[in-house]
Length: 152
Image (cartoon, rainbow, N blue to C red):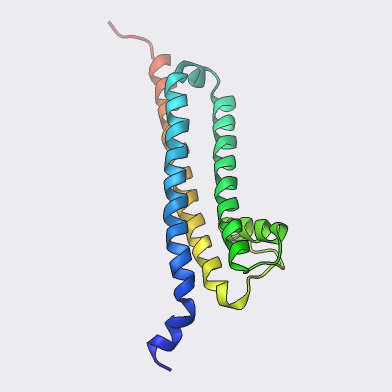
């Protein structure tokens, strides 16, 4: 078996998967930028209501990830990799989160595409985690600096 015979069946997975990864990462970065601009405008509120603010921001990020799951699900359905919208959404959410506990499987010729979505999920969750980490650091550094007594 040569390399061409191994790679040929997976060509379409890469042709669809890489643009989907790039598109969803771009959407995610724009979405996080949107959230950051809103936080910057309301930073005093965010500092005052830390838990509520971080909870709300986490909700926005979850909705953003849900939209990205929808994009992958629509691709799976368009390709005929899954039979219906519900299966496509369930599979996509499962793949993006690496949950791994569903009996929904892709058509054999599209299985690498599912692995590419899992890779995409790792990237998106990494971006989200980095954003939340930076935000928490920013909030806590402000809280610490504002609670220190001034020295004369």
